[in-house]
Length: 210
Image (cartoon, rainbow, N blue to C red; front, side, top):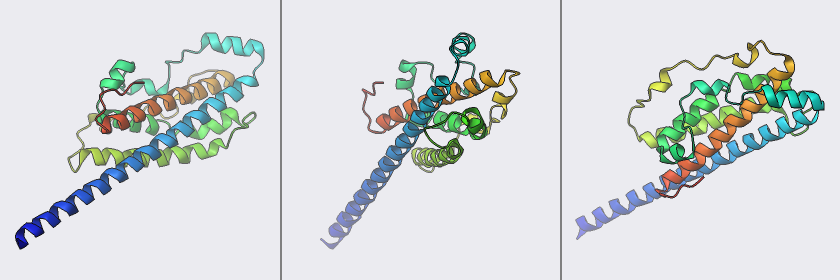
């Protein structure tokens, strides 16, 4: 009888620990999603503010000549559409999100120059810090997914995309700033989407619609 009570106690403790871990993981996921949603919203407001200060002719030219797909993140392998994103594992989406955030650590420092004359929605100098915080959070989530297993992701050993990619395009200041802002918005949208789907994967919900 005493042995049975001991075993029952062990089971109950194990269940409580597992519930606590699950609750903490959910909190981390929710926090990461909120953080990237804020960055995506800030990116959208920044580029809208930038466009509002353009002359009509400048706006028309930029809309014609800027290839939105030509961004720093193009060197990072990622799902190409909704179907592929929904079929991707939680760990894969977290790893891609980590790489995308990491690729902006250096370029984000120049966002203040791109919008310094027109920004009214926030302090772009804080973006680098917000990205660093999000990167740490995603790293913790990745370790939680691995559950003590070694990280076998080959992409982790790859060098980061060219650091000053957005500063060496040989473009005018106007085009350079617009490309920087548009790519930042695009990549934050990607990360937000991947984290939302990864969170859904965690719940084992087969209907993680976008």
